[in-house]
Length: 194
Image 1: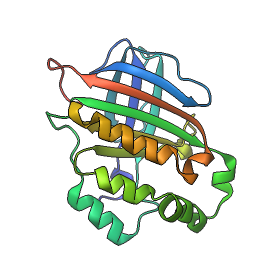
Image 2: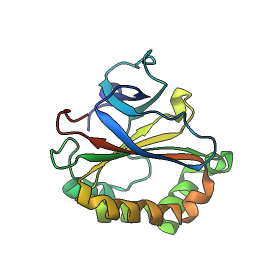
Image 3: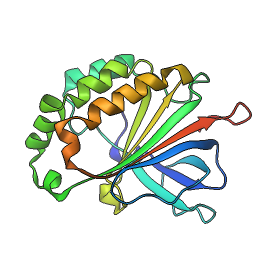
Image 4: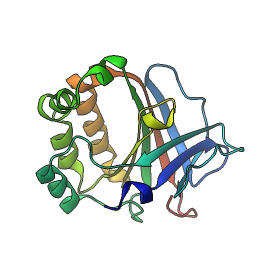
């Protein structure tokens, strides 16, 4: 797992260049991100600055599982598909900001909404073998979003991914989401994995 000091920062830079081509972009709720044609993903040990060529740069940090219990984390780790698989030529970047009402809840109350009432962890675990996921926390970095979630999957898994996000968006947890974008991407054969 590593220590908090060696967990990487991840920058998602949207603009005219990048390893991932935007195939669709939707504003689910709240204000939209400016449209871009490409997204690049950079991992760094230190906090990255904005990409000067990018239209927008979203920065988060890989962190510990804040709402998972040991048994849930072990089950997820045992089956989680890795990032960067050759077959996973599709991706989605979903930045989310939750409402002040969410952050006013105590940690155990947020856990109850997320895990027990909304089944977020069990829904995600059901798809973890085929859909790779990386969650980055950005709230403490002062960004426009609280969480930046990156998913990678094979083209034939896109219907399963749509099912996953639809199930989560229909849950009680999503009543606390005040801003969300859904950016779908494709890695072309001539490009390397992000």
